[in-house]
Image 1 (cartoon, one colour):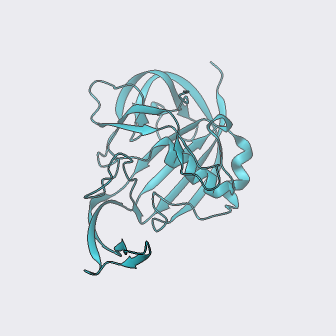
Image 2 (cartoon, one colour):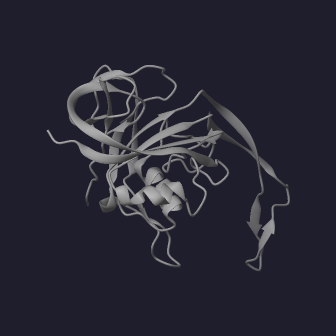
Image 3 (spheres, helix red, strand yellow):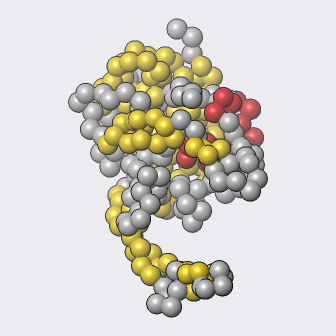
Length: 231
């Protein structure tokens, strides 16, 4: 089977928090790993333009040292009788946010033209919110060799693998923010198995769209290369 040329981009940061889109109030819950719409946002920030799903396939691994709940001071607002936005009379509030500490993202993209975007990013990438700043450690060219089975690390896969611990999450493939003055529109939602980044081991998987990166630590290591869902 023919290998696929790709870019391996490694990013690091101090904090990460990938807010679950279906959680509106209360403690801000983070998904265990970034969604594919999160990853498109990171790439788009580096490129300085919206990167559409059809422009590249994406594979990734996400690692961190630990996670905890963070207390965050918030500024509350109310609308007065004249329809004007005013500070809340009771002052500021406190919210709780699930945070992953010292995150590391190994991102694989098949669009080789994106190399300059990562070498000279237009905007600062982030692991979730704008204050979760990330920086690029390296960008290198690799080959992705298709494999029928291998050992998979923390990532997001569309089919539940038996014997692999993980949380089932539902998230959009992408979010359309191209209409000026309009709210963002989510693309199709997929159901995925998110493998926890807090488990320091890899798990044997079998199926389609698994690839061995040429710079992997071990010959049996694989990543999942995502196939985009359509409406």
